[in-house]
Amino acid sequence: MAEKERSSRTPSQLGLKAAFSRPSSKSSKDSADQERNTSQSRCNTALDREKSTLSGAQGVLITELAYESDGEEERDKHDDAQLVENTSDKQPIEDSSSTSSDAKRKSQVETKINPPDIFNDQEWDTDLEDEEETTDMGPPFRGLYSYACDRYGCNPKSYFMRHIEDKEVKMRHHGFTKSESYALAEVLKSIITVDTLDLEDNWLRNVGCKQLCKMMLDNDNIHEMNLSQNQLGIEAAIQIGRMLKTNHTLQSLSLAANAFEDNIAELLAEPLEDCRLKFLRLSKNQFGDRTGQILGGVLAANDYIETLDISWNMIRGIGATSLAKGLKENIRLRVLDLSWNGFGEKGGIAIAEALLVNSTLAELNLSANRLNDSVATKFAKVIAVNEVLEILKMNDNPMSTSGAITLITALSNNPNSTITNLELQGNPVEYEFLRILKEVQAARTVTVSYGTVLRSGNTTQDLGKPAVGECGPVKPVLISEENLIINNRKRLQELFTKYYIASTEKGMCNPEELIDCLLLMSPGLNTKQLNAVVQGMPRNHHNLIPLRNLFEAKEQKQRHMVS
Image (cartoon, rainbow, N blue to C red; front, side, top):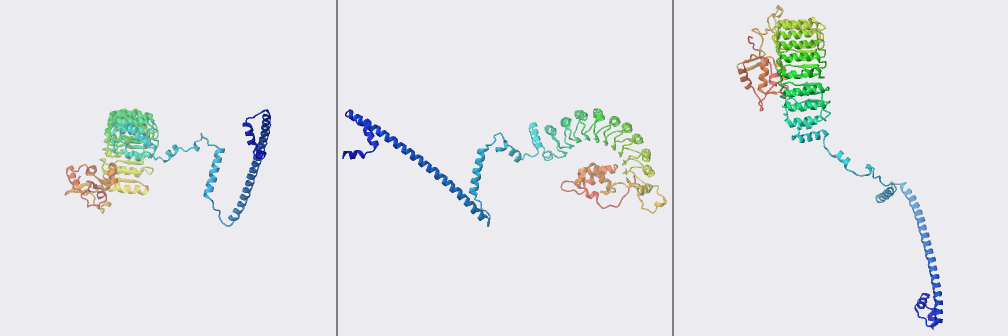
């Protein structure tokens, strides 16, 4: 029974028992060693069996995995074939989830294969370019102008902000302070789009003009500049002279109505002789004979000026004679405006003699210069031989009907004359003048304007025509029984267009403007009566008189007065 129980025990139990049992004798010790060796061999055999079992299981697992892979390939082929059959009859339906997951896996694989280039800006999301594209900062020059205004402590001009990149910047009557002038000049150094800068009547004075002239030393984009009516003085004139010596791109400069006197002309003499200007306006200043002498030298030396306007100054006979000398030597001037200076007979004859030599002047304005019949006779010689002059204006001069006939006769006798416009407004004419004019206009296109038509000197052919001015010439403006009678509305409209263009465009004028134009038409009007009549005329709620009633009213019955 003991043997049977021992045989039922496992080798490991037997080995453990043999290992931990205490031997009783030497024989038992030998038997224990023998059993230990037997047990060790049995354990090694068991371990080898387990290793072989594990290797076999691993092989079976690999075989099963391979089989499953082959099965999946077969199933994929079967599914592909089925998909082809289905798509032959209907459009394929994409699985958005599987498509997105496939794209994601593909992107991950590509990312692992081709990692992003950390030095390539296109691989990174930045907001630098987006800010430049989406942020609406407007034209870049607006920012510069705002910065300049902040720097000089002034507010930006809204008009300039709106037109800062226009080709023509026309800012009249805005009234610039010192700081505003600094800011404007500062930003104009950088602006390249402005070609014409009109700053008339802005009270720039010397400080503002100096800054603008310094700006022009570096600016080669502005070609036309208007600084008229800005209360400029000696300091401004000095800076203008420096600008003209350095800047050779400026082509037009207007300095009208700045109360300049002869001392300013002396400061500008040398710069004007060498400047590159094509247009120069010096009208409505206080220049006298000394300025006439200076400008005579400028005309003789300068080969660029094409238009010169020195109207509404105080140049008399001596200055006119000097201008005539320069005009003889000039080879460039095309337009010359000398109106409203009071040259008198001496000055008028000198200008006429210069035109006998000059071969470039195309337009001459000698209106309101106290020119008499002797001057008209001299200009008749000019018309007879000159083949360049196109426009001759001699309005409002004390010439008689004989002077007008002398001029129109010379025009008739020269078939090669280039004159297309002869203005004698304010000068009386006779029927003989009208007959000659009719012959001239039948031969070529000529525009001639004139004053009142007188009956004196009529021939028997004129007896059947209506009487004009039986008691004398018709007055352009009359005041009768507190009524205003305008006999020459065309002349009134021309005066408004010339001197009050803004009011003409609006179609409204103030009483002072109307009185000025009426006095220009008829200087002998009683000022007190004229003021009373004008003040009684209908006006709008802005106290302005409509010009339409004056320009387009029905012609009233003419009333004549003895001159």
